[in-house]
Each structure stands twice: as structure tokens, then as C-alpha cells.
Amino acid sequence: MVKRWRRRQRSATSRTDDTVERHLAEFVDTREGVEAYVEPRTMVTETTLLLIAGDGEWTRRQVPSAQWASDFARRHKIPSYDAAVSGYPDRMRAWNRQKAAERKNIDIPDDLSGL
Image 1 (cartoon, one colour):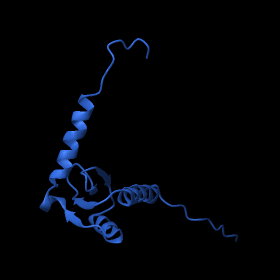
Image 2 (tube, one colour; image 1 turned 90 degrees about the horizontal axis):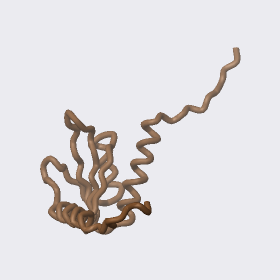
Image 3 (tube, rainbow, N blue to C red; image 1 turned 90 degrees about the vertical axis):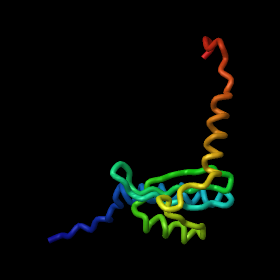
Image 4 (cartoon, one colour; image 1 turned 30 degrees about the vertical axis):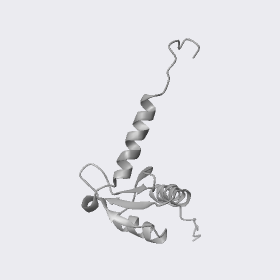
């Protein structure tokens, strides 16, 4: 009997976790004053990790678990909060307002025929 040795393939979930972790790590590494907000699973969404930089810029990604999110924050030496308890910092709302105002002020040419 010949046994076939197969390399165990990583699951799609595992590959997704790697992609998410790379994105979050890049955010932490390229911004100042980043804090982690763990958003618990709800009836509508899975557990997410919201990273908020010192200037209010933010990114959110679905993560495997709240423990995974806490471990990520610990590994990257950033503070971690339970978003359901602490809420979100004002700087995030201010950043969102600023970006919305910038979008409203985009000049759109009257004549779009050249597009």
C-alpha cells in the first residue's frame, strides 16, 4: 500500500486571517498613537477589531475572536478596550466629520462630456 503524503493546505479562513493581520499590523506600524477597540459579536456582525490612530483615522476588520484581537493588541504593544464598555474616542468622530466635509467640497465640473 502506497501512502501519499500531501502537504496540508491552509484553509481559506487561515489565509484570510493572515491578510487581516498584515493589514492591521501595517496600520499600527505606520501611524502614531494607535489604540485597539474590540467590538463584540452581535446578531448581525462577527467580532471586529477597530484600530484608531492618534489623529482619528481608523480601520476595522473582522477577526476570529475577541481573544485574537486582545492578543494582537498585546503583541503590538497598543492599548486595547472593549468598545461596548468604553465607546469610541471623539477624535474618530472628528476625523469622520472632516472626511465627510472634504468629500462635499470636491469640485465636479459642470461639463462631464469629456469623461
